[in-house]
Image (tube, rainbow, N blue to C red):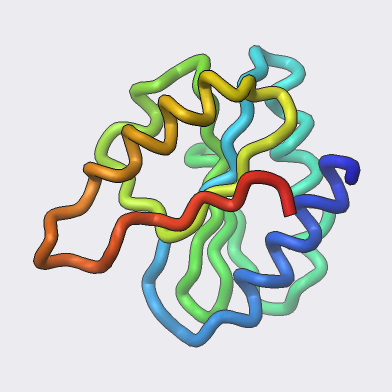
Length: 124
């Protein structure tokens, strides 16, 4: 499945979710200018939805239902720090070792009193 197809399926899933202020992520392992590839694909498809707001400086797309999709990279792990993602789409540029490290990192982002840990979506 191509990156565009993965992002399209992911955006469709997020757009259909019930209203909530939730943060979702598309995570890749590319350096610029290749990291812009996922961002451009997200803009291409998410921009077709009515009421979508685009925050270019944050690489985030905000849907009318309150859900947000952020593009993040493992090249800059600090970009993941402090983010509490509801779901994660990991692109094919990330190795299995990096996926396992990412999954273990995400498991401890939330306290037990809060919602459960995010559900990584490793390829749709």
